[in-house]
Image 1 (cartoon, rainbow, N blue to C red):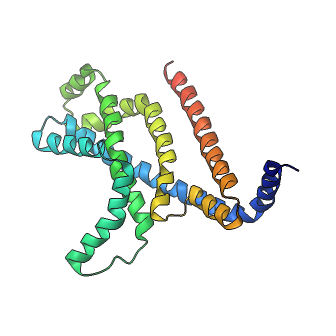
Image 2 (cartoon, rainbow, N blue to C red):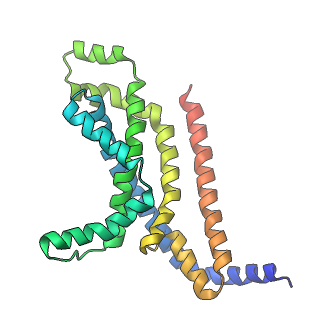
Image 3 (tube, rainbow, N blue to C red):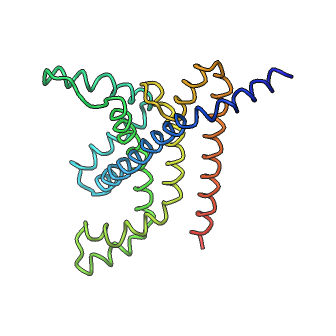
Amino acid sequence: MSIAMSLAISMMNDLATAYPGLMGGMITTLKVLGLAIVGGMTLGTILALMRLSGIKILAIPAQLYVNFFRSVPLLLILLWFYFAVPMIYNGITGKYIMFDTAFTSCVVAFMVFEAAYFSEVVRAGIQSIGSAQVNAAKALGMTYGQTMRLVILPQAFRKMTPLILQQCIILFQDTTLVFAIGVTDFFRAGYVRGELMGLLTPYILGAGAVYFIISLLASVGVQRLQRRLRF
């Protein structure tokens, strides 16, 4: 029997035992993904509205925020939140953070980082709506907030849904970076199990295949949605 066949059989036999841990890792991955999307989209929308407000005191800080986080690697932001923020907190208060700093740090890091990218998507979506609708809303006596909430944003979100979903797929792939600060996501769960059982290479390849399949299926779904929204 070949070595490759032996490794495949060993891995298949071990998967039944490893399944709960792997699923626990996938749940952690989806938690990080979900919280990062909600937080990133919320902050990103606020940043986009600030940039489009025409008020310099709001637009300039929002632009600086977006430019900064789009120029810094995500891994660096992740490590900064994990190591520097607890240190700064301890230096200011003299107390230690008592909750799970690894999970919280990665969620906050993903939120603030992805907000810069979601902001650009939202801004482009808002700018794609014709100015005539804004003028019509003003003629009806709507405020800026009412115009955005009731007229512009609903149409803009419909147009930018495929781009938002595409960014979410990229974010799903980026969640593997939490491995660097010890969060047991799906990739780390597979890595630890593979290292423990002497099957590191098959487990890493298997985890990569799972990420590839999920991302591919999601991308196909986004393309189909995009075609439907055109008609």
